[in-house]
Image (tube, rainbow, N blue to C red; front, side, top):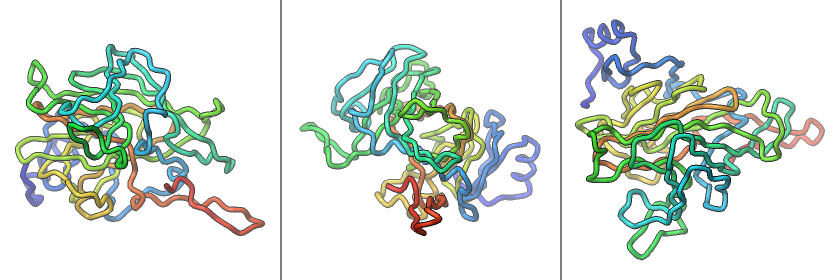
Length: 303
């Protein structure tokens, strides 16, 4: 979809459909946004959201446990994004546990390790979760460049049988590693490198439920898609600098209150993509944790 400046016509259409239009694009009535949308050109995530940063980019196969309804398979070169381990759902309701996805500073100032339990609600194959790496070859995966845990959807040249987008719809429940309560938990996550296509929306993340804010630039190379979702349009992001202006144009941040949220990830027919959960540091103001007596402070959740 080509970007065009706002006009009286497009603004009127947006108002008539009660849709949020970004970057000059107008979405169909199928796109529904029910949560507040914040412009990262003028705002940063603040407050207690910064006390928990959900990040799966450092997750390895050793951090995955409690598989139920998933087939764990070795990665086959040419089968989508590079990986070491692939977790393919065999049924709706399949679940697994991902350890050490963040550190939560609770309302009393205490720190707790956080795991997430992932449960598949629905999917259209080919989809899976996998431990991804930035590069690989027929000889193997480059283990020095971990990309982390996340969903993948689609397979290049192999669209779903009915021509629909491959997708995986899943719920995340956050739990303390020590089994303690999560009362008052709130936090932030995000989705980097959401790739687009000049002809049709491609890679998409939908914030289906459990979220109270979406965060993206007003000039983002993203367009509204589905339920509280955004899909890549215009171009792909292919650089390694995730803090550049172009990187931010391919980024969607999300804030949540409570220990459970639901996401849907999808790609256009005939393509293959993978993604992880990871907020960009430059978009979040992290609270200081400090000792009144010692006068020293640290920024929690920093890598």
